[in-house]
Length: 301
Image (tube, rainbow, N blue to C red):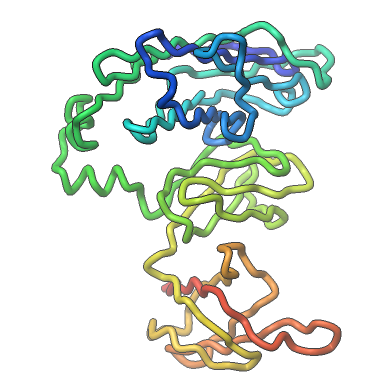
């Protein structure tokens, strides 16, 4: 697929047009992303309605496109009351260098128009097809998947971990990982492969996170499901002994609060091969009374 080339710093507007045969009253949300970073949502009013009830707009300011570089998959998620959630990638966009100025301006016209057609249970945008009435495995078989249903189930539900390359994020961005779990660990690596520890995040449902960063981020996002290695804990005091039963003192660990956010102030110290000691932070010279949340503990040998 040849990319659509957009100058960095040029205002970008994307028009999504549903065909007359699509029952528009079934549309619950449209989410548009670049490399899994959400740039517009109908529910959040960042996908805009137009005078045409079947047409919707996504606008990126000149300042926003100036922060983007390289190639991005344009991903569209359609939330339909009967078909459910479908996502597909109809276009590849490449942001190329420009010496022009950049500002908060938007394009009131349209740079990219996607015509979304609906015929006999099919939503179509160029080569992306979604069939109503078939299972996910049957759809995959019709589109060239040759493995077994068990192999597809593993593929469809997502890997245990996944690396997303070429990601650009700014403060308060939503990043889509589609891992189907809110119990995840997320790590950020810059374009030189160095780990970035200054970014905070929290889960948004089971398919996305909200990112908090003081500086724009460019690099890789590494997401790991932590269901199998997660221990739910309640009312642990400073100095408490917790049993993980992994039979190893060589462990890696992370602590998460009850909302799934990483809690860096709580520390764990190995105490024999099957236990850790909980160290809670001081507040005004007094230890926190109790901690409830989750310990993510794995062996590293």
